[in-house]
Amino acid sequence: MTTATVKTKSKSAMSPLTLVYSGMFAALMMIGANITAFVPFLVVGGVPITLQTFFAILAGLILGSRRGALAMAVYMFIGLAGAPVFARFSGGFGSIISPTFGFIISYILVAFIVGKIVEKNGKLHGYIIAAIVGVVLNYVIGTNWMYYAYKFWAAAPDAFTYKVAWLWMVPPLPKDIILAVLAGIFGHRMYKVLKVRR
Image 1 (cartoon, rainbow, N blue to C red):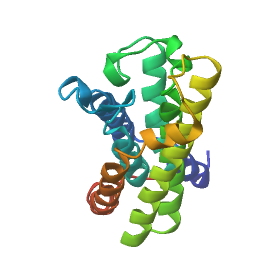
Image 2: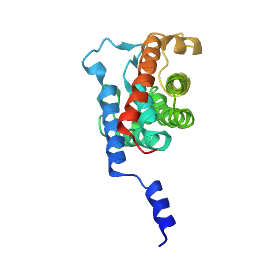
Image 3: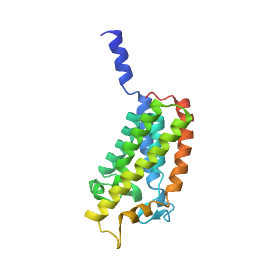
Image 4: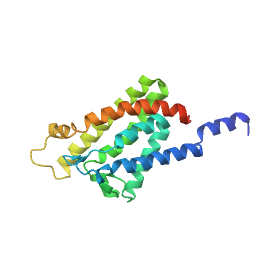
């Protein structure tokens, strides 16, 4: 085996530390999903206000596109396997038909795209822009899934419209924008400290 081959394999392989970080972010998602268990009033229009978007963005910022997306995929599959890790301690394969499952799917793409952006622009403003893009992706995917879920297979509330679906997302929006900016700043600093290989 040549030296070049060894170097190529070492670069493509995941280090034990990176696997630990991926597992850590999957665990943080489980915690962030169930903040409403302690503050139940943070549910607006049936949509739990959680810290999942913040942690999904942070995963992409710190771990990069592939490893960040992997951490979010691990979280999703743990929940689909039956562990009560989704919002309100729900889980199981039946979660796929939940009106809010689109947000869970979006976390994988959010982490991947956010990671891609900072891999190309490692400056502070790049981190903040990436975090805000992550919020937009999260809302677009999650809200559209919620709308079509209510329209086609869930019991839609009376007078439910596409506009109403987006109005439900107004209360958590300021929180997610503020947390996105903070995630950008924090992620930029933590990546320099942790020096995770992307």
